Length: 317
Image 1 (tube, rainbow, N blue to C red):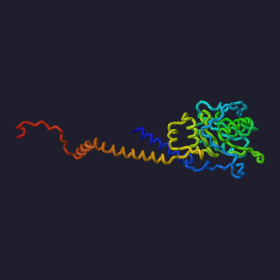
Image 2 (image 1 turned 60 degrees about the horizontal axis):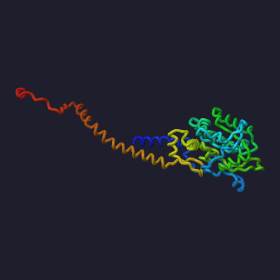
Image 3 (image 1 turned 180 degrees about the vertical axis):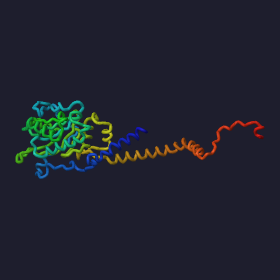
Image 4 (image 1 turned 90 degrees about the horizontal axis):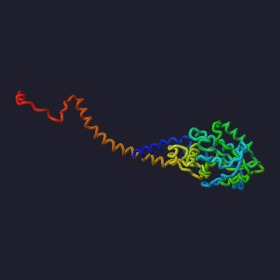
């Protein structure tokens, strides 16, 4: 019973402060994060239908495909899936004029707020893959250095990987995560949706986080779940009891009903303990308090056993 009560208290202590910890209750009710922009706005309907994110939760990305990292080294996608660490996968391209920068900035900003608990390289990896096959490692290294320098992430530089590759390999990966994009010759840019994916250490798609701003709670919980609890603490696992992932919005929503239920159980338990404890306190402490009260009044206290009676002469005297 004591463990049950402790669990309830810990649940409330973990969940309630997190409701406003990131400026959001989790009940956003919108398919995009606050402050997001709609990449389809102003585009013809036929183009809008060609871009987007088709969620393929549980699908596995092809880990044997080869790419080049920002240093020009040939690597396999599977090289970044090891040691039981989840991977944040970011579709983008490095010469993007607006949206890709917003996605990267939003992700970096969210991760910065949980940096004391989860840090790239130590707890997870970040893999950014360019959708533009004409880009090369020079574009990748310029983007990496500018982003990390601007956002002050030099100490965790080892956990960030900016890749480029062939059109065929890029398409296979993007198709595996359901990421649809097209190249607009008139605009000379790629039109695409906004969002990132969190993958398990085996390369399986675990969570989609949509939009261009990613709440710290969403990032934290998705990393814990995708790692299969290999990272995080008991408090993080308990917090998952208070939140539920909504694949339609790509966000974690606070389950208010669970908090209400936990609070009601804690209240009932406390009242029950009070009812049981009060009579016991009176039973064990009542006689002692009575004796103290009599003594404080200056009255004699009779012993339980009678004193020895004297001789008959003494009684007559």
